[in-house]
Image (tube, rainbow, N blue to C red; front, side, top):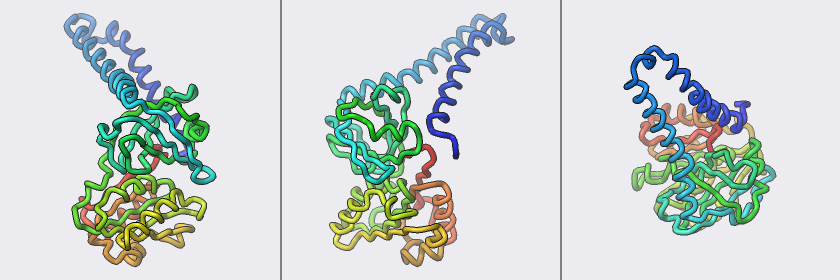
Length: 295
């Protein structure tokens, strides 16, 4: 938990390097290769194929797609003291077929962290010319996003994930539970349900200052004509336990709902246990745990 995303990412990069450096050692000293030219050729072909796949899917395809959509930073908005939103504009973004709740791998060509790809969820339903992410400053790269300049080129990988509105059964009551900045993919999903869908949103935060995108959520609830209710659970975990009794008290129809939750692993685990205690089937429990992903 104390490892920064950048450190975690670099460990993976070095693993690629280690495998590459061991290649000639395998070919020259490996017992199965020394006297078998066909095995050498086959092993070489496999290495080339894997290298081409990594190069293609991690660099070539994202570069080509991002150039096609002409993705650039449009603006950076300060949401709270340590949370910002980045709005990225482009063209024909509907072709991405992205949905609220999904995430992309983002690479900002700002001259500092261009070589790192970070996973961030969309924090608003995508449109044909804009994508938005909302990020809490936790590591070196996420802290630098507030300094992005308008017009910075953006490369993306994705969209990824099945955490989206279409995972729920039509006509069923929906419960969305978010913890801290984990509310961001849920904020995007809120726009994608049918307007008549009954939705309860439980937003867990330590302080009022940590309620990211509150004004937008209040607006969506007001516009829903009563079909959407938002419960702000501000304070310590002791004051707002996520057990079966508490959740059923907040949402009497909890056991008969489709549950979406995104937040820190302890929160996700607690709600999963409560859902099991109340008899919610696994196919109606949709979770997205935040560790390095999306923060």
